[in-house]
Figure 1 (cartoon, helix red, strand yellow):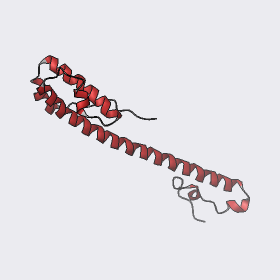
Figure 2 (spheres, one colour; figure 1 turned 30 degrees about the vertical axis):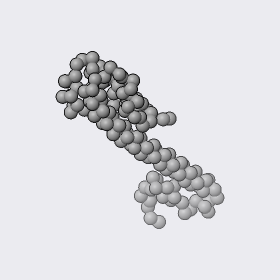
Figure 3 (cartoon, helix red, strand yellow; figure 1 turned 45 degrees about the horizontal axis):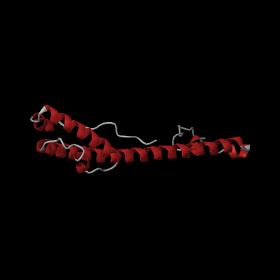
Figure 4 (cartoon, one colour; figure 1 turned 30 degrees about the horizontal axis):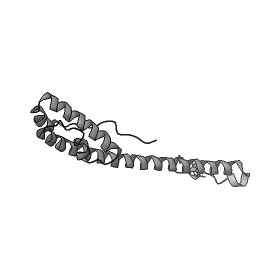
Length: 137
């Protein structure tokens, strides 16, 4: 199941630039940032592709967009790297659980076998997660 990125951040340090824009330009900026963040989450996207869809943006708004889009691009790349690490960790957990299950099945088979096979069995034979203190004979 592929996880999709569901959000993006707007940092406080962008506020001084954004507050100097007229309200209609702020709306254009926000729309463009949302579009860019969604596109960037799917695959790396050129800022110019999004800017071309917003011809009503002033020069100042375009500049603010470029600064803020760099943050979105950087954050999205970090998210991708973290997502890969999480997927790898989940795969390792599945492999470990599978190995533990196989080890347990082998132990049970040996236990169910002939009595001469059982006399030397210890819980540590079941794998690393099942090794309680066993009294010495």
